[in-house]
Each structure stands twice: as structure tokens, then as C-alpha cells.
Length: 75
Image (cartoon, rainbow, N blue to C red; front, side):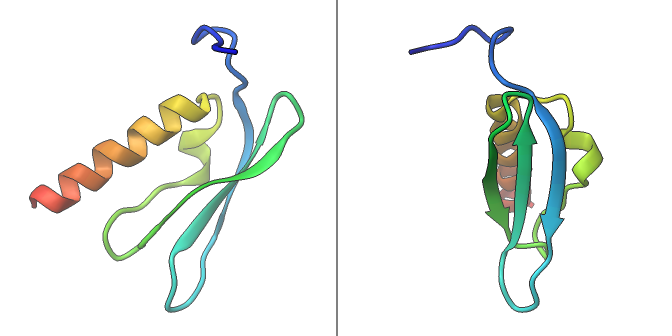
């Protein structure tokens, strides 16, 4: 089932699990009640704040990850 962008669940809560010597994880709770790991990243390459993800859809958050990852790789 494909939802329109307006119907997609939005991120209500986001947290970052920082781990020494490993990727940091973004854990989110969506407004449909589901909690999941959204993505992981190397904090010495790119960074995120939990507050910037609140209100985004998963699709928007993944697009932001991709944008930052590409910017890092091109730098």
C-alpha cells in the first residue's frame, strides 16, 4: 500500500543512540505508535539532531540522510 506524502506517519519522538567505536543510531516513534530504528550513521562523517527529525516522514528523514551522506562523500 502506497500512502500519499500527506498520509505518511510522522516522527513524533526521535533519539540518537551514540555508541563508541560504532555507528550512531536514530530511533524514532511515529505518530502511528510504531518505534523503530530509522537509520545509522558514522558521527565523524555526518550529524543529526533529534529535534530536526520531529515532524518529518520516514521518507523525508531518509532523504535528509542521503543528502548529507552525498555532501560528505563529495567533500
